[in-house]
Image (cartoon, rainbow, N blue to C red; front, side, top):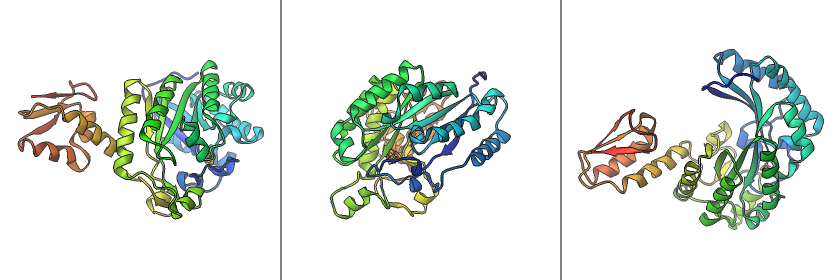
Length: 332
Ligand code: SF4
C-alpha cells in the first residue's frame, strides 16, 4: 500500500440518483451534485488521470464515489468502477477508495468485495437517528439498520463515516443533538452535516408548496449546526463538510426552492461559535490573539464578531499568533 503523506486529496466521482432505487422526500441528486448523468468507465478514468496529472508525488490520494448509493448499483457496475481504479492502486498512485451508500445496502458479501478492492472508508447516509424522522422522510430504513450496518463496517476494520441532516420534517434541535451523540457512540471517524433544502421535483417541494413543511431559517440552521459541531469537535469526529457543495445548479438557483442555503454556510457557523467563545471575555480586553487558521472565523463573516466586540470596546483588536492553539484564544 502507498505510504501515507500529510497532503490528502480526494478524486470525487459523482454517482447521481439514477443509481438509487429509493426516493427520499428531499432528494433530487441531479440538482444536489450538479451532475445529471451517471459516469461511464472511460469518464472515471479521465477524471482520475486529470487529477493525477496535477497532484504532487507524495500526495495521499483516494478515489471517492459520492452522491448516490454505491452498493445499491448492480454488482457488475460496482465491480466495473472498482476495477477501473485498481490499476492505479496497484501502481501506488492512489492509496484507496472511499464511497457513500445507504445503511440497508451493507452486508458481509458486500463488505468482503469492497475489502478486496481496497475500499477503506465507507460513509453511510444516516440522516437522522430518530425513527419518526426517518419514516416521515421515506428513507426506507430504520435506526436499527444504521446501527447494524455501522457495527458491521467497524468490525470489518473500515473507517466509518455517518452523514446527518438537520431540519427534516419532524426534526428538532434535541433530536439532531441525539443523532450527533449516537454518531459518536457508533464510532464514526467522520461526518458531514447537511441542512435540509427544498429542491425542485421532490416530494418535499410539494409539501412545502402545500404549506405542510417549513424549512429552517439560516439563523436556525446555523444555531443547530453550531451545537452539533461542538459535539463532534469534542469527540474528535472529523467534520468533512457542513452544508451542501454549492453546485452550479444551486448557485444558479435552478433547482433550489427554499431552505438554509448559503455559499458561506460553514463560515457563518464558525462565526457563531467564536462569538459564543467571546461572550466570556473580560470587559477590559484590549487584544485577542488567535491561531492564524482561526483568524477569519474569530473576526467573523463580514467582520461581524469584530464589529460586535467593538460595541463593547471600540479599540479592541484581533491578531494572529501561531503560538496560540487552534480553537483557542489569548486575551490581554
Ligand atoms: S438514498 Fe440517497 S440517493 Fe437515494 S433517494 Fe435517498 S438521498 Fe437520494
